[in-house]
Length: 234
Image 1 (cartoon, rainbow, N blue to C red):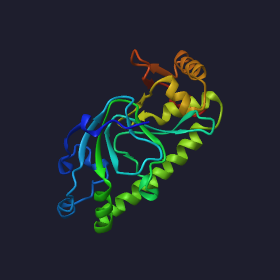
Image 2 (cartoon, rainbow, N blue to C red):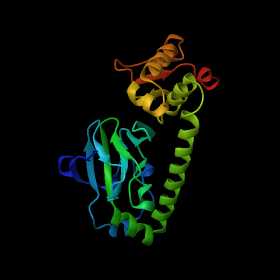
Image 3 (cartoon, rainbow, N blue to C red):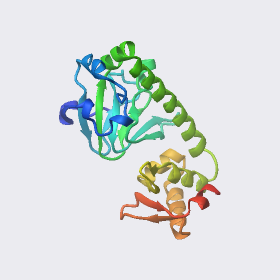
C-alpha cells in the first residue's frame, strides 16, 4: 500500500505548547528548553477513513501522535490474509516500534477520519538524546505499547467467538465514558478476531437481543454496554 501524499493532508505546523491533549501525548513533560531544540516542523495532518499513513516494511521517517480518531495496524498472514493486530486511539503513538528497527512493522490505516501530529525522526532522536524528560516518556510509551500488544493477543485471539467479540466490546469502551463502546465495521472486527464476518454479525445481534449492549447509531458502530457483568462473566 502507498501512503497518501503529505501535501494533500497538510494543515499546518502543530502548536505543541498549546495542544488540547498535550497531557496525553509524547511531549507532555517537555519544557521551554526542550521546545527550543525542535527545528524540523511537526506537521498537523488529517487523513480520511481508509487512508494509509505508512506501509509495512517502509523506512521510518517519523512517528505520529494520534490526536483524534482511530488507526488500525494491519499485517499480512502467511497465506496473504490481512490481520488487524491492534487499534490505536487518541493519545497513542503510531509507529513507535519502528524507532528500534528503522522500518515500520505493519500497515497503519485510518479506521475513522483521524487527525495526527507527524513528528520527524530527527526531532525524536535529538530530544531523546538531549532531554531526559522525553527519554522517560519514550520508555513509558514503549512499555505501554508492549503491554497493549500482549493484551490484544491474550484477549482477542483466544476463546469462543462470543468471548472474543465481548472482549473487543469491553476493550473499545470510550476512555471518557466506560458505558459506551465505539466499534467499526464487521469486516474489520473479523480481521481482528480471526472470525468470519457472519460470525461477528451473529454474535453482535445476539448481544443486542439479550440486552447486554444497546445500539446507539444507525451504522452499528456505537453501543451502550448495559450489562458489563454479563460480558465479563462470559
